[in-house]
Image 1 (cartoon, one colour):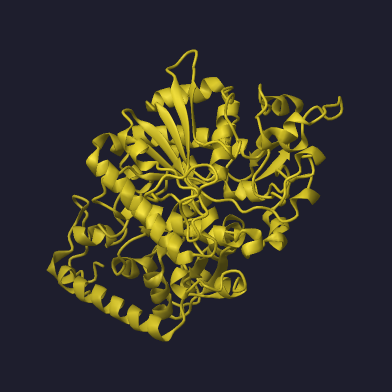
Image 2: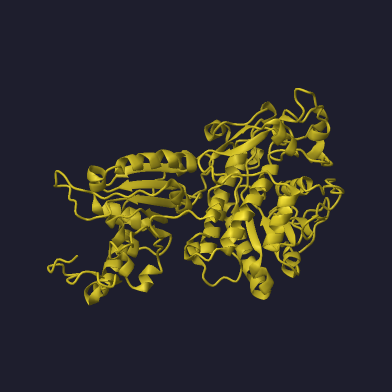
Length: 588
């Protein structure tokens, strides 16, 4: 860059005396031309070359035959030398390769990705010490972290092909490397380029005009882990292990749950050898990010967390799975009396939780199978929403909007959409828009905490299972879909779409009135739990469900861990909201 023959930077791009940028007019004038040409070529390339590998789509064609190419979400990790001194014609060269820790990739590559490509420059492959090893380690790591995605790892010998993959990807993550510089300025969003800026800037990227920098993120390097970041990592990788006697005891309720959710527990006959129902004797262990554990909640620590966040109510809105989470939480907090599960009774309820050392708060549940306002109110036995008018959608938005204090809203939808992909998309967009309208009309709603819980498919023939799965590969052969199985196979792509919209809402919407939407994602940890369903082997003949119920769980059981996860996520949200670090802008 200090070469006088360099037409772009004849005086260099950095004033070394002041460590400030000095691009001059040359580069500033040619930059729009470079960006425009790269984007034009990328558009032509997409029209002539199938860049988005459809392996995932084809592999699941029987289950997801309605999905189109545009439903794919492609993430690219590009590895290259952080210096530009190497050429493939050289026999030897020093390639400075600086990998990132695995949690950084997990932060930036969304869990909704259907394709994750690791692309390696030829010079990094040939000269970079540890470059290919890092690529191979990432490949195996991503296989675990994104078990439903198509993971690829390739050395891209063509610069044009390498650039096109980076420009057209939905998400781009780059450790320090000159190969990412030009593609990054041709992109519009979801671009994370790590650059060395201390003691001096190493490349010209940080010196580009602000309107270019606004389209990408240049996090500090080396990356620093922030405690609140755990909420992006927790429960994504791990395993269930047998709990010891003390832990198993802490996982029991003081009072059993009435009705079908508590039938298995009520009828369980304890023995000295088996004092507790087997599904309540497992604990979740984080196998990769041990510093982000899920701790079992107590009434005291949950009350304290609600107090610290200033929350006066938790409002659950959703179907039976959401109700089971709400009932689980009230049970853990010793407040599950007088909650009726009788189908002839309106299922909605509200309980006040007394806290000995902190203010009280409420837990409210409103049944709404599709997160929509149907216009008419249902009643037991009289559904009011859905294409066949066979679902229940009790009004919820006015209750949420008019609440006087700060609250936590937890919602879920997906189970009652069958294979109506377009309907689910429109509905979720309407839900997010409704949240924004409510916040625009009532400033108090802008400080609420919002959470979307992912949907968990059931387990085929759950009556045959009496223990947990050891890993995702055990679950894969039992994935089912179709109307008979309540379209469980649609739930993961529904989750993916919701996560995609949430990311856009949190990271790209600069004019929204509503708060960011946090993710409560117990999907991975729960698909490893075929045991403990209402029709599970532990239920007993007196708890017979007809037809077989292999989606809902008995209580206590795996659903309790959704709430233990909730507590840990709330702790991270508190840290995130209190942090004044500028890095928090991209840690949403």
